Image 1 (spheres, one colour):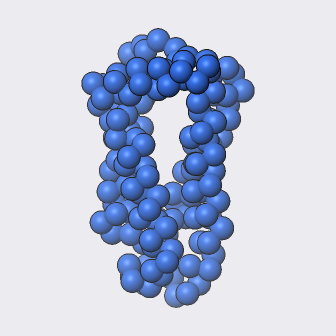
Image 2 (cartoon, helix red, strand yellow):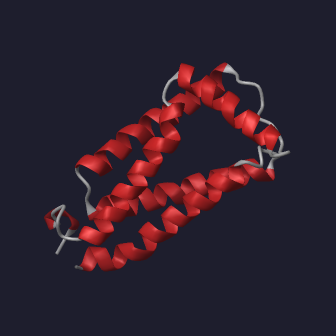
Length: 141
C-alpha cells in the first residue's frame, strides 16, 4: 500500500496524533501570524520570561516580525490541512519539520536565546519523536 492509496480512516490512532499536533500548533503559533498579534505575544512571552527569572526577549525589529509572521502563517495553514484532511504522510512531514524547529531552538539557545525556549523545545521534540517513531507502522498498515 502506498501513501497515495491511504485514506483518512486507514490509521485512526495515528491520524488522531496528527490532528492533535495540529491543534497544538494552532494554539501555539496563531499569535505569530500577524504583526499585531506577534507584538502582543512577544510582550507576553517577554513578561513570562521575566516573571520566571529568565533572560528576556530582544527588541522587535522589522525582519524579526516578518519572519515570525511568515512562520506563523505557514504553520497555521499547515495545521488546518492536518485538521481537515489528515493523512499518514502528513505525520512524517510534520515530524521532519519538528526536527528542524528543534534544531533551530537548540541553535538559538546555544547563542544566548531566551531560556523560555526550553519549554517549547521539549514539546516540539516530543511531537516529532511521537510522529516519526510511529510513522513506519502507520505507513505499513
